[in-house]
Length: 236
Length: 236
Image (cartoon, rainbow over all chains, first blue to last red):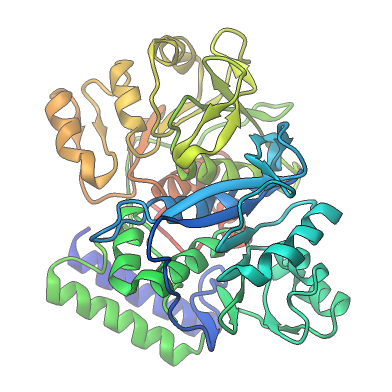
């Protein structure tokens, strides 16, 4: 891109914001952090990341963070995160629009994760019980999109700030009056161990933020750049 | 986001561009179109979108466009695209970082698609033969990331402009001297029927551009907004 075009583009975007009071397409372009400081990677081995996968799993909700974590490399670790999926069973499930996915583990036999990713999906009692068991031992449990409802049902958001897809903010507030629902944000960090992203692509930003918390901003920048991800919404 | 912060952010981004000659993380923020006009949806039924899926399929490359196409709705059609996956067989394959995926169809029995999506993956002779057979009947064949090499191997990019992931531009040019390799773009449209995206998340922008070509800009805007996707890289 030529520099002139870039500057014109930035000015046009600013003008659109000015004119409408909201930027184009009402983008959520920042996160909110409340006491979420650095995370410490284990001294040896990779950081286990468990992705919950049940019927109806919205594809970008898990695929965005999946790609982020797989693309991280640091000066001394090539792929510091180890990804796996966990579901009701290990038969294929139907993700959104019918994408067929096979969970690697069940709630019963999944290795204990340090990071838990819960996107929009049908869920069920197995997921709830697993979240209650696994979350207290993890560094971070994060939802994407209406995955926030799964965390809420497991009691993980009680008394905490949280967000979800913009079409479901009111429902989250109604259904769980003890959650402090936050609007217009890419993600909300409710202390060091719980975070919730907005809808769909917002999960990419929250995952990049998690990378920053483990390995610092330059590593997260490098990951975003490798992914050709144009958003800076992960910077708090 | 408060308006002041937005403007400061835009100014800072412009300053970073000025200082370095490249914007932060060298984002590709625009596409290039050469004779790619509107596409006509079929009078009845949904638009079949086939996603090629072989071992090593990079997750965001197919998941980004998948999510875009599934999230489209128009005034008279709720989900105008019908998505399915095609591979060497219908046993589980291992996508990037080991994500287990099951193709819906084989190259032999897949329904004829109107849109073909080819992300980074191992590929093979089956994919090549299928591309040569299916692409001439499709409205559009699009690659994401190093999926461009698959299109190139099938001869679909000969004599055409194309792009790929930023780390593989030189290799594409070296390996296929008859391709006019374009740099620094979210995607390249080589006429009405072939397009190639840059790396990873760039595929989201190209898919939004395809939505625009079928259903117009407001529908593409609405889809991006629903996805909370902050990039305008799909606007050419």
